[in-house]
Image (tube, rainbow, N blue to C red; front, side, top):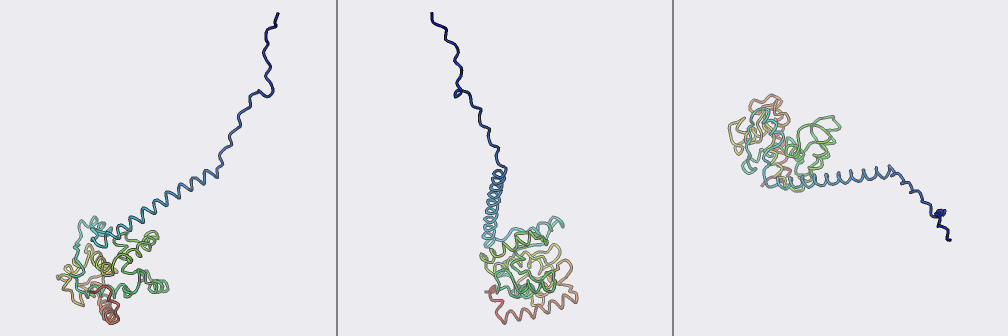
Length: 255
């Protein structure tokens, strides 16, 4: 009589192996992945920003900026502002010459930054004097007022693009149309009528020099009721106009 088959003892080789423990992810790999992701996002954001700025620089080389941050903010504060755009051909040539003589005598010679003026401003501790007309246009059209390092860095980055794409005449035209000449008075068209009751095409040498003389501090200086300082400053600007006419430093923005 056959014996009933007994249960086979499991062989040593047939015993179940315990699953291997998963090694914990190394924190270095996680950090590296996070940094890669952050770098990718930063690169994308920087690329989009650069393309947007270039698009706006190209756009405003042919289309007049509808407003600026300063004009908009002053309009909100005052309720309204006086501002009307006028082409450079409708402005007395002496007006453009006066602002160049007053603000940036080497305007026709530099590519956006006047290194000599910046160095002189640093040496004498002046808070003003190194900023070119091109930089002021960038600040007024694309940025905001103030002395923050972020604004200065953006200004330094955008200015060469404006110099490369815009003509010198276009830079002067935009500058004369967005500069503030009195509280709530923006652009040379509004300024000429506000101070002297004439159109910008009829400005005399003296009137143009006085308008240029108020530009650094338009809220505290008057072109129609000039202080002794403004008179003296305007006289110096007239001399400067004669100089840049004679040595050719006004040629780049004239017909």
